[in-house]
Length: 102
Image 1 (spheres, helix red, strand yellow):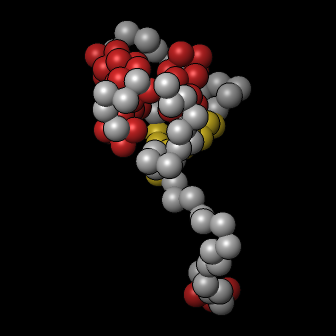
Image 2 (cartoon, helix red, strand yellow):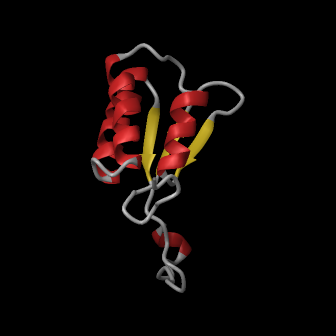
């Protein structure tokens, strides 16, 4: 099982309601915890598909990116705002942008 595999999973941020309002999902394990512990409703069709897809991704039946698409549909169904994240690689530098260009 690949609970903490993140190499093929593009991270995504979630804006939830409540005290634990912001979550970043980096791995399949993060996604499983989010779905089981922090999801606002557990009866939607897309939510159920996301839970199944998470198990399928962890067991290698589908790719992490295929699961990510299902997870994003579940977030849309639940009214959760999402933000795709692009991780910076080690040693990679961002170009300097002068303040007036920002």
